[in-house]
Length: 337
Image (cartoon, rainbow, N blue to C red; front, top):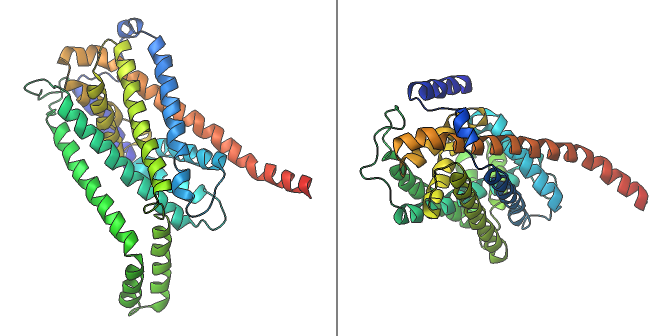
């Protein structure tokens, strides 16, 4: 499936005359200091995103910060490497701590995705209200007949979807005892053993939502989430100026949001195709078609290169550290003994 998706996107870019690799002239005309600055901003944002997971895990059990961040970075690398967002299972499977089950860790990851999406969509909605797109919105991206008007519609739909998901998550946590009794009553008619197993797993997932009614965990997590998205948007604002397609801060927020929505759905390894097309659609809302193809292509290429290679390098380094961690723990125990 991922091969088919990759081939389909490659064909779309060929038909639409949207360059995956920018021209040499566009590369030579790039302000390269903005590439280095963007890499620094992106690195800071990634570290913050990895660190904030601690506030979701801590209500269950304390986990060393280094381990939390290392597993989070490996999980990000898995999302890049594996198709169809199969990398989502890596973090719950890899995190280790007393009293922390795989199902509880899964609950924290699911909650993180829902809150992440809701905060991002709220920022995207505010940016869409503040920015001033082209009028009328183009019906083509390059030579590809894709109406750019789909972008705000998708943003509003995503906002409604994540808002509903957040409410459902809160109801699920508050009614977890009733849910357990209902599962035992319904599935117990067929198999008490299966009903008990299923109820235990559902209860484990709900345990991962224990941060919701606790402001001292939810507050810092929300603050870090907002800061993460603002950093991401500021990086796009800076590197866009370096590439000759300057955008305002609200426009960069739209670009950030469109990119986040584009890579959120199951797609090919490396987010190939969805990543580039999302940014092309975002730029097409505010810039002339010729500028999108000639100038935005190099910015999109740089963003993709930095994020993909940077994520894989950080994931590889974190995996190496995690493989050495048990040995270091054993040595510390022997030394203290």
